[in-house]
Length: 315
Image (cartoon, rainbow, N blue to C red):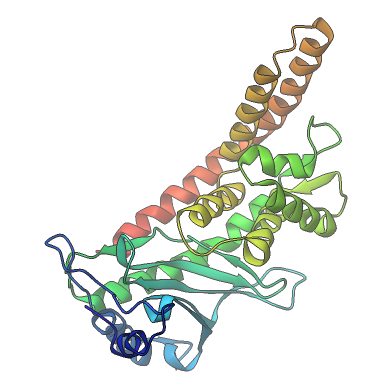
């Protein structure tokens, strides 16, 4: 299969133009994007929020790559939002979706939000739904209705997650690592860790005492504005780390503790002073984890309840 205009350019001697789009195989069959996104258009015309059709309160952006063979879009809905005390700009909910002619899957979609206060994007707010290149043409109208219902459920709970995360402070003056090192221990590359830390410190009441919501916002700031790449597995990995800071603070601290302990072991210094310092450092991290225990059950119950409602929304 070739793209006609590219084929003509190729015939005219344009060596940089590749006309080939697809080599047919038994394991790959094309899903027409119209079959997927046509039903979304119908849903947006008919479903409403505050009495207005979703299509009339929708806004966002579309990004196109590889001559249109790969397309990603973020769409949000004015009015489907979370408002935080002291902020005039809301966090607006929506979905991010894409079609990839060349990749492992044809279509993906997941819950998405944008923080109007700082233009940060919050991704993977619902489970990522993927349709592969195997001709899996289903009832996409019902599919979109269920996915948008999930996004509405997230909007109901996101405020509570944020409020709880704002109550969890990390005192970096008592911890054996800096804010930047906090992000690198979680797995962020240095360039993202530095950007995330800079934003978190700038927005914290104290540069040494930063709450988990502010640390999450720092991570989303770095990913939104400075991630060097495009949509894919690498970005998804960092998004999961950022989201865990918000909705799984205990798991986040455990991950940091394990990474710090591995660094101590890798240093391999047998000196008694260094060993004692390492033990004290780990103890300071463990105290943070212990302080979280009373709030862990609350986070877990809310996350479990949200997932149950997701399952109900998806039928």
